[in-house]
Image (cartoon, rainbow, N blue to C red; front, side, top):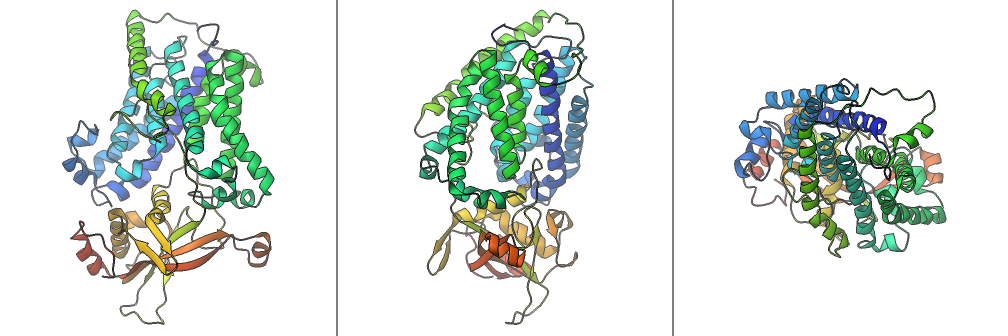
Length: 501
């Protein structure tokens, strides 16, 4: 590679193995959750989606005909293939075989994302797809990787970090007055065990944290464009920042993937100094075939052309966040937490086996794996695993306007009503998405959803009660409903459910 950037043979092996590990996590997550959420009898079935949306808008293998069995095959092929790459079994194969393996992995996950609807509408899905596509052209250990795919991944990292910094400065004022971390650890999607302690740090360190975030996300990315020692310093800063984010919250594989992208900032010389031990043994370099050079030139041209709109987006005051300009998710816009919520509201689902509701009716809560519920339960460590239902439950309160007299709702999401329907049926796949089933596999007679304000306890409250959270009931989110009544409401999806059924 060019002396300006340094050699990247060993870095290439580390990058590909680590990226394969992220793909492995993504396919395992899909295998465990996709059928319940989007399968034949899921909340938003894929078969319904592909009847409405043409293939050219969301290309996917499942347009050949979706079934849960086909999805299981796809997920297991993805798991096996990513495991083989992670274990290094593709490091000394011909370049075309490694390229084919990565492109198959990329297309299988693209097939899942493109029919995943709201459950796969997260920025790190596009990140994983874009990274996997460019990894396909890095080549095996027997070749010195071309500068083209390495710079394409660095360009992706540049857009990711700078986009995250600019979207913050352009939106929520708390990022500009350095107060966002006063709220973030409490209101983030899924807090982890240390989030409570971060939230209770003194305000000065939290403000310094916001300032450091701005330095990392607005200044450091430009170092990636500099000579090797500058790029390595920028990469080290970015990776250190991501490690801090991992310690303070659960963001699926977003931080892990960002760290993997950061590997491209280090030449083999830098990696050799950072990693203790004997010298790295690499196979002899073989020349790249002429056909490979032609493919790389085409890749460079496509990357430049597709980069125009994302580059303009970074300069725009109306900056988009996590947006794909093409159905194969290449060269996307990225950004995260442009707006910080100042209060945390949670929807708590309760059921009862009583056939008749009275003031003495006992309601039992369903507990989710990640999101807050039981106030005495310590926030769990979930990442890099992605709990998709828990994340969607975090988004639900954003459509609710809290007033002095209660709450005003614009209607309920279709997926949420179908989720409630599955709970009323005691659907086994759905119950596996939850931490607890208070009815031990039996269907409840009524369900309801209540709307709470959640806050972290303070030091004194936690010591006295052992509770991590305190909560205040605001109002009903969904009044008590039976299976028959809910099914009647679902027959009229054009009229969002607002009142008890």
